[in-house]
Length: 87
Image 1: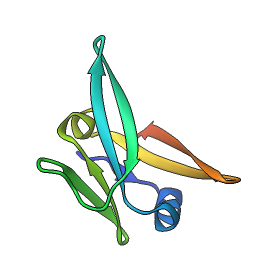
Image 2: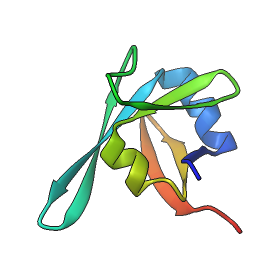
Image 3: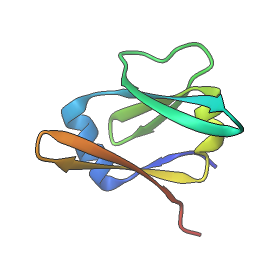
């Protein structure tokens, strides 16, 4: 499986542009860092839906393979969520 992008996140990504999600291992946990990106880095996994893209480094791709990315507009900023895929 692979990270999925929710309907709402597609709309938000059209506003904010392409994102790259990086996984950083710390104390046995994986912390996710989200940053704007223009192109994937070597070894990145590219997730595409309806013309928007999200780049995942290998650690993030593995950690998020069964998740759905949600991005929710909130006034002048966005909230990011990761939820389990249905089924």
